[in-house]
Picture 1 (cartoon, each protein chain N blue to C red):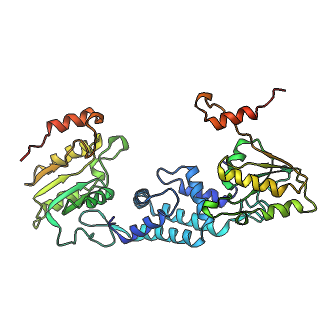
Picture 2 (picture 1 turned 30 degrees about the vertical axis):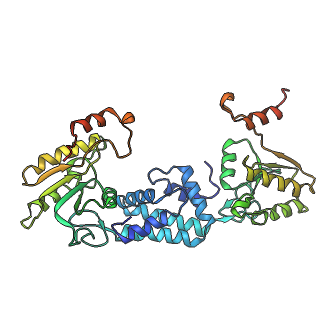
Picture 3 (picture 1 turned 180 degrees about the vertical axis):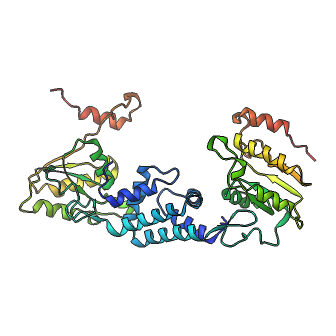
Length: 202
Length: 202
């Protein structure tokens, strides 16, 4: 495509490097910024650079944080005896939004995926093990909250093997028919699993 | 949503101001930038600010340009006797990509839309009229290339009224069944128009 301006072309190229944004969308965004007040572009650029330079990962759970320890880890009202293992920060946010979990997290920073060349060594697994080996460790239960995909299951299998040495209860989030889901349209694997792992009425 | 970091929250807020990007996508983009090299964020921010500060609109056709006149207007090989009127720069790019038009453009910078409060005064119409009134004006034909929507048709109607005073040929791009389109699935208005404005074999 012949862009009317070199500067636009550069900006479109940079925007289109973001995931899920192609050249056409990038151009739309660039033209939007051109139409708006210059301040909007300036504050967008500043917010991005400030975020990139100043955020860090929590030393304990590897969640994104403004300080050495994240707001969840330093919160005395959270239950430090339960740790939920998730793939990334977005999963922490998703679980936090449910208001159903009061424990701490451990963010793996990815998932084992041989296809993408991501092995256990690329994830925050060693720090999880040393967190559990620590003398003052209060962790009694670990919940694996990984996506029910091939990669998620591989990671869960690897983790359960590594975590067996610790005297902690291991569990995984329930798989089944989503609330509001229609049995008729559920896939066979999910429906089958939901029967195998049926929940008894108390 | 409770963001793990104020800086992320600010960045997400700024990204989500862009059209078509919600908070979830904005978070995904922010986390993507955090995972990548800091240089990517820096060059994205720089490209945006540079673009916003340094691009201008062509004094003649209002297309985006690095200089006072855009590369199309200063190109001596373009046919200055035909001017194509479009809504915005994206339409110029789309038409340029067809390689079927060798004339010049006039970018209105919007379209008449009473619902959004955009009237003729907000568009680059006065400059079009003065461009045509100019003594050295070579324009012989004006092509309206506006979207076949209510707003596009309103704008076209308004323009034809204003342009009648000049001795220029007025035309609009053809409406009809798209190439590769299936008659069966074409909407009635388009199919009806394509019969009314049928093209005789020569």
